[in-house]
Structures are given as structure tokens and as C-alpha cells.
Image (cartoon, rainbow, N blue to C red; front, side, top):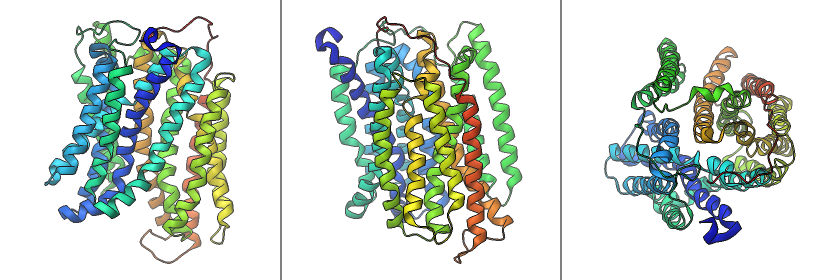
Length: 481
């Protein structure tokens, strides 16, 4: 394919898979605007309706671990086109379903597909691009990743108003069809490294089951901490910790037997990768947690309307898109640890600056602080994967991309529940609650304490980010995709 399409081929390959990743990310964020209509149609309670989002999240998080095995066994094209076909089938099934269990099944199918496809671009960037182009490629891909969740909910709101909640499921259909056409033309049939796909190894089903149980226990445990029986949550989190220990032991044992584990423990012998995983988990926690917390803070603590919230977040989204593009080029010239550290410092500063705002705060100050946080995200997004995975041996890159994506997503899923738990705890300590319609300084103080927790997490990640030391770059051409 490089001979057929020339030097531009690697960019065509990246854009081809980027369309599919945008579709998968859009399907994960856009459904939230359809939950009220879906709940009304099927006469569901909030808890059952929320499983439309939670089922997708759990399926996506766990399925990320299967990407290296699928690529090795079936190759890039079959794996990618299979996930796009599954995402397409999930969209059609959800849009046409007449019963809630079918809608939930459709979301799980979409989540499985989204999880498999998301690590693939990182593998392609590190294997198909020369070292001096990898940052620029990450910047281009990062812009697409940011645009999907930024545009998706806005378009989704219009579609729901005009055509109802079913239109949300159909929105991914054109993206999936376009990605299938591009994949047939530009995505290679080989496995990573340009070798032929091999059907020798078997998927680690035991590891998959342990990871699924552990993820479900962790996420449900965090949710239970917010309920009337918090000790249920503590029991579930203890089970999650036990599942983690069993998972690590099984992965080591399987590798000693010559099998192919879901997550190669040898990855963590590389200090930069291990520290990158710490950063990814905490970064996911802070990113997803703040994405949940900021709109709630603006509406509940500052009493701003939904339209004001959208207006404040819009400039930050534009700044983020341009920052990612610029930092992507810097990543080809500057040490990764410097860029990631700058990003984490800006993100921590944005959380800490929220403490300066009062009930009479100017919207301009609020918008400026949000922009500072998005600047920080723009420094981290195109740099983190490169700094963590460049030291890895080439055969370990698929495993590395899968592991770091899994940990970032797991941190993100936990971050939303963590922020909600800490917020409700601090509100109770201050004698307030989210159901209280009256404004109060106590409510503002509770939110500020949660922002301080997020700032502290970012500073903790900053310590790990400084360990992202890269090996000297070679001038030779990279291995085949």
C-alpha cells in the first residue's frame, strides 16, 4: 500500500481509522441527551435508564484489552472493519428496538466495538510514522477525538428535538459506512509490524472474565458509596482489589506458560511506560470527573442557565482544538515529560483557581479559568501516549496502547463517581444538599473542596510525568504498520 499510494499513505491510513474512532467516541457521549426521551418511552426509572450509558462504558473499558490479540489474529483490516460493522449493527438495533433490553444490548455491542478500535490509532502512529512525524500525527488525531464529543451532543440535541431519541442511534450510521469504505481502500490486511495475521494463539478468556468482574465491582462500588448502604460499596471495592491481584497473578502465570496474556506485565518494567500509566489513570479521573463537575457547579452552585454553561464551554473547546494541533508539532521537538508536566500544571491551576470565584463571579473570569484547564488538556493529549510508549520494544506497542487506553478509561469511569461521592460527602458535612434550591456559601465551599481534590490528583500525576524519559531517537525509518 505505501508503494501504491506514495508518501501520503500513512496520513490516509490515520484519517481512515480516525473516522471510526470519532464515531465510537460520539456514540459514547451523544446518548446522554436521549436518556430522558428513552426513559419516558419505555417508562423507566433513572437507575435503569442510566444503564444505557453505564453498560456502554463497562463494555468499552474491558474490550480495550482484546485489541492486541484481535490484531495479531485477524490483522488490521479485518479487526477494524469488524468493529465498524458491530458499531453499525448496534446503531441500527438501538434505533429500531421496540423493547428496552434490545436497546441495552445495542449499547453493549457499541461499547465492545468502541473499546477495540480506540487503541488502534496509537499503534499506527508509533509504527507507521517516522519519529519526527509522530507528534504531528498525534495532534491531527487529537483534534478529531476532541471534535467528536464537542459537536456530538449539540447535534444530538437538535436531532432529539426534531426526530426523537431513536435518531441518536442512527447518527453513527454514516460515519460507520464511510469508515468501512476507507478501511477497504487504505487499511492493510497485515498484523502490526507488517507480518501476516496468525491464528495460533487463543484469547485469554479467564483474564477477560476477571477484568470484567473487577471493573464491574469497582464502578458499582463507587456508585453504592453514594447510596443508603455505603458498606455495600466498600465490599464491592474490596472485591475489585481482589480481582486486580488475581488478574496480575494470572497474567504472569499465562506468560510463563508461553500463552498470550491480555496485559503483558513485562510492559511495566519500562519505567517511562509505568509512570505513563499512572499519569493516564489520574488524568482520566481528572478529565472525566471535571467534565461531570463543571456543568453541575455552574448550574447548582453559581445558578447559571444551561445556555450560559454552553456559552462558557464553547471557547474552551475551540482553544483545546487549536492547542492540540500546535502541541502536536511541539511533541516532535520538545521532551514529552516537559509538555505533559506543563499540561498537568495548567490543569491543576485551573482547578485551584476555581476557589477564587464567588456567587457574584464574572462570567469572563469563569470562562478564562475553564480555558486554562483546556489549555492543559491540549498539552497532555497528543504527548502522553508518545512519551509512555516510545521506549517500548516494537512488538510490545500493541499491548502498550491497549493497556494505557484501558487504564485511562478506567480512571475516567471512576472519576465521575469519585467526584459525585466526594461532593455529596462535603455537602452533607456543610449541612447542604443538591436538592436544596436555595443558594448558600456552604454549597460553594463543598464544590471548592472537590476542585481541590482534583488539583491534588493532578499534582500527584505531575510527579509521575517527570519520569517520562525518552530514549534517543533513531533516524532510521520505522517498522511497517
